[in-house]
Image 1 (tube, rainbow, N blue to C red):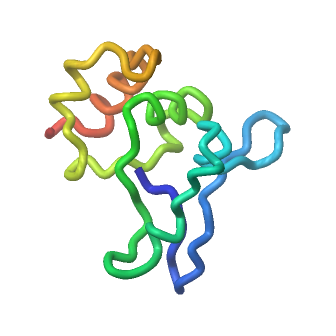
Image 2 (image 1 turned 30 degrees about the vertical axis):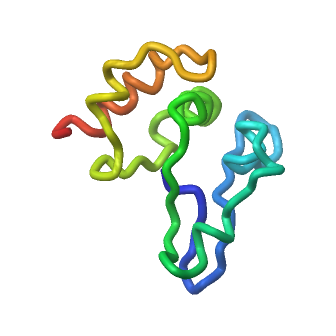
Image 3 (image 1 turned 30 degrees about the horizontal axis):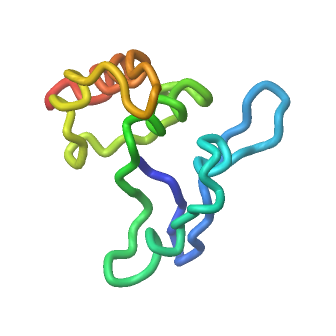
Length: 107
């Protein structure tokens, strides 16, 4: 999933706002702030803007910010595996499966 804006080398965390609440990053939404790895995403040897995240974290993010607001790289996602999976880390993956089916129909 795309987690940072690394244009012009800024490495700024993407953040989402929901119904009057303050903006929150992926790491805040999924309660993983102490494992914030944005510098690893943005820096050498492979600078970019995305990272492979757990299925439970994907479901959590989609639930909190909506499918349309989550940027999924379908080519880098094991879509068949996700679509076969029911749960991950105690999370029901139904919302993630529905979102991925819609976003990645060719996979």
